[in-house]
Amino acid sequence: MDDLDTESFCYVTTVGRVTGRPHTIEIWYSSRGSTVYLLAGGRERSDWVRNIARHPQVRLRVADRILSGRGRRVADRHEDRLARALVYAKYQPGYGGDLSGWRDSALPIAIDVDDTQPAR
Image (cartoon, rainbow, N blue to C red; front, side, top):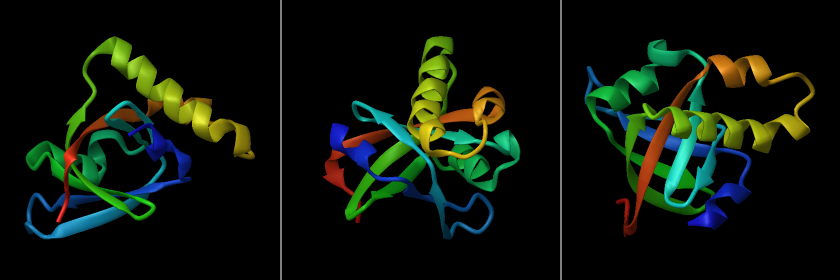
């Protein structure tokens, strides 16, 4: 699973909390083991975060790999720091501005990937 971190972005498909239809976003990410970390700049107001809260099962596409997983808000303070550090470290070097405000204020979301079951 460590090879997931080679792409610039991933696509996360959630189930709409109201419509029940799939919704896909393109988003920056980083991974550690079988967990993919995302930072939601809109925090709990982000539709995709609200969708995950209602329907945690998600589909994740990184390049040509499609995986299933379970999304969750990061609650543990150590994992919170890890998620922020990983995503920031991946994108800050190539970004023209300062991402530290985003890193510090965004809501960390984890997707625990089930790499034994490819998504359909």
